[in-house]
Image (cartoon, rainbow, N blue to C red; front, side, top):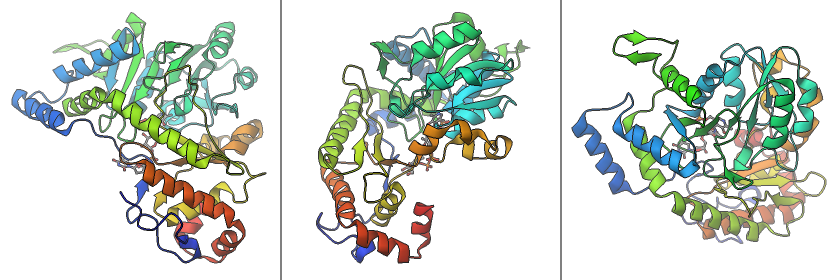
Length: 412
Ligand code: T4K
């Protein structure tokens, strides 16, 4: 998409026209080779095998096993169900420690099964769970820890697993963001008892909707497969309580097509990330998170931190300005799981133990990336941010006077 005004044009908040005629989304889906996808869909129709562990699902699982170097991949209908099934297969119960700064699905996957998510604080340097905050949350009811590799940057698995071993707790990871990322040279997917990937439309590899649990534990993999399919081992034989977590063939077709483009998609994300870094460099109070160049990264998230001490505009003011220009920046994962229901009501004092989550969640905004974004678009987005910051006083005054619901929502 082309911007509709010059990068030096007046901001909408100051009376100009929007930089983009159509909304720019943070999670715009990527597409692999369209012809290959349509060919696969035709083959599905010819075969009349639509779901229930079909050939494309098996092929998708093998491809993931190869890419991640893991023994088992159990593909599922989405990552939330995959988390729920993994939690149940590991027999977690009582209380489980999770970061407060994550997508709500991590907490809900526990709560849905009447397990209490106990929220740990964030390490501001990585946005991941701060291991030093875990131990004081352990009670006799604690059975496990779920780490989340936020933005694909690995959490401190060594410390988490040492704490878990000391207290005889199980560990699994929500690796929804971390497909084809590595930690200390080892691919994510090989840590803890198991790890969960998401292949939702907004992820860089997508199945429309999809997820997977990966593990090197044979017995756990068998259990996960049973649970994914109602506990059936044979036509008429059920040996385990299960649910329906199956991935469909059309979703696997999308996943396989997406996987064929994995290197290109990482290259696009890396190029976009580099362009954002170049264009935002030197802006007071604005920084962009770093990915460790010694590791494998998917660069799927353009995460900007707005330092309230240094930036002349707050994160919320910048988001309001961007939205008016049709750049739908997001405030993930503000305000933190602990401030969303039912946790807000069930654990009203949780925030007292979460000072870093409280502080950092207010600073973060995400910008669009992926196949539909190019360097010209990025230049325009960054120029909007730069202009807003340069004219911070008039921008703030105009935002204060503006009564549009869009602005009220962004400033909330
Ligand atoms: N754990 C973690 C750490 C996660 O981040 C997630 C999901 C999960 C677990 C659970 O995984 P899944 O069960 O979803 O497999 C979005 C995604 O829906 C969600 O998958 C993702 N994390 C989360 C970070 O982002 P929302 O509520 O922001 O979705 P929504 O509908 O606002 O879409 C995001 C943006 O993408 C919008 O700007 C619109 C755009 N979009 C979206 C879709 C679906 C498109 O342009 N096209 C599309 O088809 O959660």
